Length: 123
Image (cartoon, rainbow, N blue to C red; front, side, top):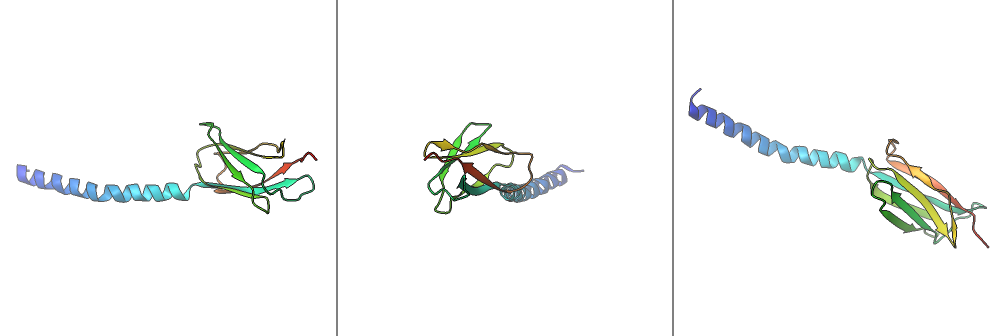
């Protein structure tokens, strides 16, 4: 093969790679976005009544970072776009009382996790 033919072939391969790389990266980003987890649920008292204003904590067990959400009037909470490769601990607090801790496992393939957190409210 002559030098110019090799050069032309090399340039063609490089151009193809440059064209395909952003497309592959974009597809990977879309796939990662589709794989995110969402955790939602309700905070209830012992009699199953919703607790508005309860603080729900989501703890990343790898980094120990904590996010919080204040439950709405129906006692509902939501954490969106969580990493599917991380374990999380979720619990709620209301007026000095705390629910049990629930775990969201990275081994669970569900992308939408729903849970109920029950708090035995002190009167």
